[in-house]
Amino acid sequence: MELYITKFLTDENEIELINSASYHVTKTDLDNLYNDFQEYSVLIYLLPSSKYTTYNYEYDDTVSYNINEINFIDEIDTLVVKDISSQQVIFANNQALLIDKDYLKIINSALSNIKANVYLIPEHLVLLNKHTNMSIDLNNELLILNDGIPARVSHEIFDANGSIFPVNDSISIALDDLFTENLIDEIKNDVKKYPNLFSFNISLDSLKMHLDVSKRFLYAVSLSFALIFGLPYLYDIQINDKYNEYKEGMYQVFRALDYNEANISNPKRQADLIADNFDLTAKKSFQIPNLEFIERFGIEYIEYINILPVEDTANIYISNFPSSQLNTILSLSSRFNVNIIEKNISSQEGLSSGNILVSLTDE
Image (cartoon, rainbow, N blue to C red; front, side):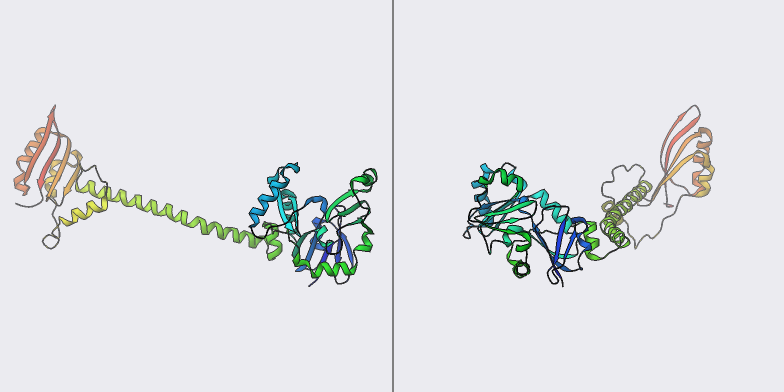
């Protein structure tokens, strides 16, 4: 497994990537970084100190991290120009670092697309083991450590404001002289001692990169999740449709049993009550009125017939039946073994309408 380290960055668009085994240097950029080293290697990305602010702070081990964070923010709140909620606090080596959360998110998103074990480390921390006061010439910038607090400044600003950056007791060294094989080996061996600011950012690109999956596989997974979460919803809709069909069916049954029934609040319970009224051992069938008698009425005058098996009766509803013809038929009903129980007939202009209640038995 190879290990790679980024050299102290002076331009975000250019990265010098060093192989810790061969010490070979490759120039690349953040977008193409994944093309320049073997998969499943270790990448140590040194975060430029210009991207964070460092304060001396003695971490209190007797209280929680949150309490230390509150105490630190209370100390430096008046010194911070930016909204403190936009900054992430990192504690290390009796220091506290403030890093912009949005910038950190951008870096983590880019590094998440690299198939490697990533360490994102503030650059000045790898120097504190040797020096707390030093200046490093980064060609177009100076990296200055003053009592362990880092600062990056251009040569022009330093020359014009040298008094602001006290380097009297500092060791001045060129970058190539500092970034030796010994320093690379030390960083490699102590990498787990430093705070790692890397946080994997989950996205389709990062998952595709790390899982070696194709677009077809991602579509299949997406479809599977859609089915897993969608099928219960579709099943619930189907159950509701079946339940509504059941309610409508039960309503039609009650309408057949009693045409005047309008309140069907619990059809299953009402069906059970009706079933309880049947003596199934004594009566397994019922008979309908004499069909010949019904035909004599004239089918065209009959609206419908409501059969009530529980009461052994049937209601024959007629409309606009010629009154004289109806009276003749009703007077002959006994010849057809039809027992008329009740007549509710109204006549107007020689036409009769209403209902006739007849028995379904010969009694």
